[in-house]
Length: 286
Image 1 (spheres, rainbow, N blue to C red):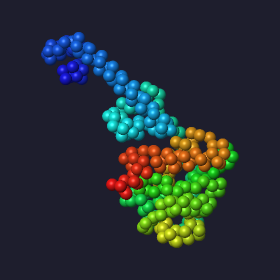
Image 2: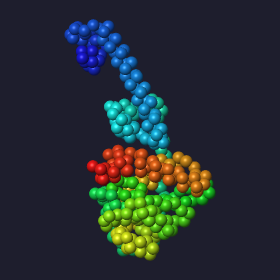
Image 3: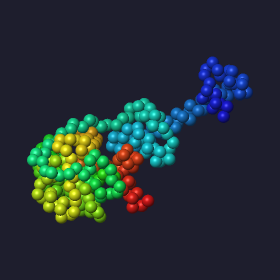
Image 4: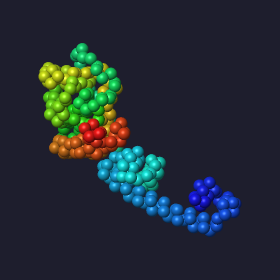
């Protein structure tokens, strides 16, 4: 305890005086310092190895906050600053690339109410789904991705990838979501005012299933911010890091990212660093 006190509060010119006051041997104190340094070095080496493994399993996407949470979940006590320092020393950093944002604008607006009003929360699964469309580039052609996200656990419940950005695209994504996660109560389906969400086929499907349509403002990304955030994450963590040669390759890589990584492995800060699957399962198994 005395050596630890000296190490914490002493400086080079104070060691002699503190040794006399505390009644300890200076050579013993210096030996303690060497042992402490050796112990810390071993701990840091172990942490670097674990950090590298976690970073690799995260597809080289995790930064220090998520890696720290992952280490703590394994029972290791470590601070975020220490993890960040060890990552810098090892040359490890999140390999994301900034997303290039592309948006669409709706024409011929309908009188649909915005039922979300930028309140991007839900008390349980299957209460509010949000949806949008983005572009995916391959060497063969441009593709269009429609996704449906559950606001409760931020999980992607349905998605579709097609060559045309039509009503069929969003219908496929929504139908997949309904097959996988049929709602047990009235569901709100929120999107922008793109024509794909306002067509007759979409209206008939929503009416038949008993879903209330909610539309945000025209060209206002903040009215559908959670979907914008998902697409930004998708672009920075996958699409902008890789070049898809074919449509088949793009489809497989998107499936792997969404179904395997994003929904089941990626820790989300808005979910207290749980995965969407973990967060949803906590409802059924408290």
